[in-house]
Amino acid sequence: MPIQTETSIASQEYQISYAELMDLSPHSALLNFHVRHDQRIEHITARSKQSKACFKGCAYCCFFKVIADAVEIFAMVDYVKENIDPQQLDQIIVSAKYNIEEARNLSHEEQSTINQQCPLLIDNTCVIYPVRSIKCRNFHATDVSTCHASYNNPKDLTILNNNIPEVYIAAMGSGDGFMAALHNHGYDDRTYDHNAAFIEALENTDCKQRYDAGRRAFKTAKYDND
View 1 (tube, rainbow, N blue to C red):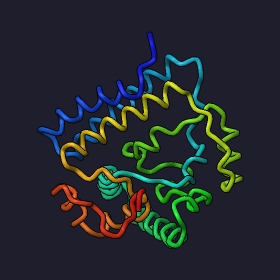
View 2 (tube, rainbow, N blue to C red):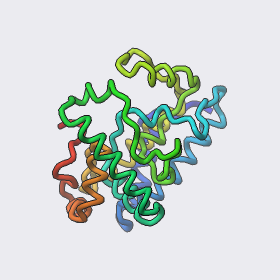
View 3 (cartoon, rainbow, N blue to C red):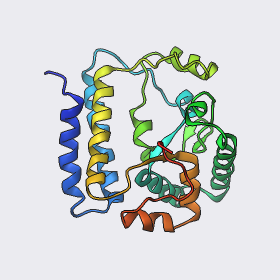
View 4 (cartoon, rainbow, N blue to C red):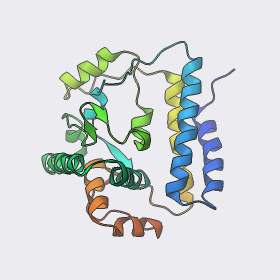
């Protein structure tokens, strides 16, 4: 069976997501998308001649610069409110605010050359794994040594991740299709700094109200093109 192109996968996902968004909130549509997306990736991975080197407890990628879309941030906030105990939530808030301050005066490029632990990584485990971002879902490696090298040398941007090409293509197309459907329904599809957007959404319910009204969700959190 020939490998589907990124464009064809994006088109398929767009049609499904756009139709769902006629009747569902973007938050419900996101959860449905997660199921389709994960199944799509698992199916293609199973057919590949290459294998992922990723395993539970390996968290090198959780120290990279993280960006996420507004709808994903809201899913994470809802998840921690329902599933994380107050002590862990306090730990997450402290960690996120530390990251915000550390990166405050750095450019996006400079932020890509430092290791910053994701605040949602606790004891080497992602505590919001079921609702982790599309970017996190798409990241994989076939050789953990490159992840280790990048972690040890964050300023060396020539170290490239070894991924499974057909999985990468499917993952990117799938995510692009979903985000295009959100965009064409009038929802904010900017990618925001994960730490700052998470804290803003946690502390200010107006963010979600602005998003649902089709406006920019976050007032203070930077997004990828700021």
